[in-house]
Image (cartoon, rainbow, N blue to C red; front, top):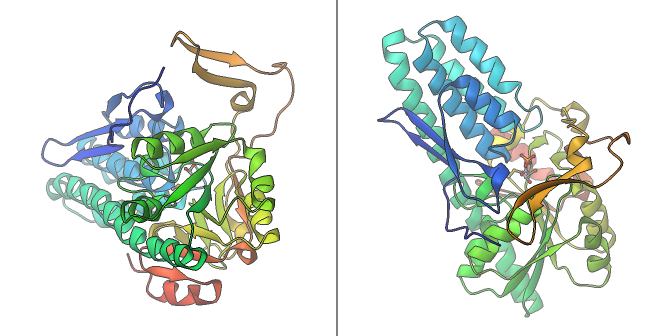
Length: 359
Ligand code: MRU
């Protein structure tokens, strides 16, 4: 039982109608449904319960939440409360803080009459900005993929973790951006998508790549190391939720282990992220808050049975204790380079990016 990806949009901000619609990612890949977010509270809830997910996308949804808040009240206090509510929805992806703070800073001093219109315009602009960043990032990632293809002279095998694809953004994704464009440019490649327990975002990556006709292979999280040791992976590209000033990178839980395996096998390991994912105030990974999520995500798995019926099954003794960090930090020393919308940066050149980091 499967439904087509068919390029469902992840978020739509209708500036004229003052309406926000998002794809409900909790239902994927079995059902494609969109929901309207009616107020800032609903936007915060959609981020918290992962109706929307992926760092750039939750940033855009946060901005949309601020536009909804500006609609709800003309009080500056209300706007500040909404900003705090939205930012507290999920702690790790800095794009959320970035987008909400940007909106608040611009709207706070405005006359209430102007504010509502400006809020919707700014939210739509942030959405558009994420789209263009994704397209620019793709160009730089494609250069790396092309160079590797020329060097090896055979089809490439690329591993990715989590979903840093179209579904995590508003356009081509981050980790997948260059994969889409390189494939379209004729470079033969296969993507190995880590399943990404416990929320299985890798199944979303496999789903969206398959829909684009890109050869993709879904693998269990534990398989990556062995594939790398056997020589079955040429390149690893992952997304990021927050990159500290020293290059330490928070990304979906399990990324660190893939970086270790890549380093041990001399496989290039790239982090792909737009400028909105860099947090220059975080000196190192130790300053990045790591989200702790409910143990039920480990105990229960959602899916459909062979008759297409949606079901949730418990896969362990439900009384067993769990620890469920949503993200981990990959130390900068394990990262070959950072693919951004401003170009590709080696660790020692991150200071140049920082100097030019005005978004
Ligand atoms: O918990 P999620 O699904 O919101 O996780 C975010 C991610 O999708 C990833 O960590 C991703 O690699 C970075 S966002 C492009």
